Amino acid sequence: MKLAQKILKKWRKIDKGLLVLLVIFTFEFTFPHLALAGALSDESAISYDSLYSEIENNLPQKNFLPQAGDVEYKKIIYVTVTAYSSTEDQTDSSPCITANGYDVCSKNNEDVVAANFLPFGAKVRFPYKFDKDRYFYVQDRMNERYPNRIDIWMKSRAAAKEFGIKRLRVEIY
Image (cartoon, rainbow, N blue to C red; front, top):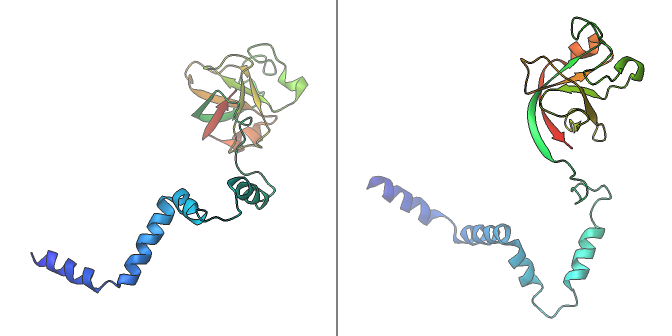
């Protein structure tokens, strides 16, 4: 009973103007389209088309929202990602040749990954680790004990060690 009385006393002390402002701001942020419609309800010369074109013209030039054509990936997963290089202790007796016959040493492009759960040739991307336009292709397989892991081929053992082990978002195309 005493707690209820304390709450009522504090409630009565709240300024009524503050309470009205709180209600207005809550309404504005909860129902912005109604507030906009109310602002345009008078017989003004502003149409929705001109309003939207004005908004678009005032946006920054850099497009920060995804466009419909940008989202091409089929699936997003989060997996453990490691790195390896072409040394016999990390691969097999032919360290430059991947499981599907691709020669990583002669091509010398760091765009090859090993994954057991994806088909050969699958295209993947690590958007929060590498450049947005950098894609990797499944050309190799890993040891059976790593069924849900991706291994990125790197030119040097030092670069692979520096990469370490990470849990990354992977976009599969």
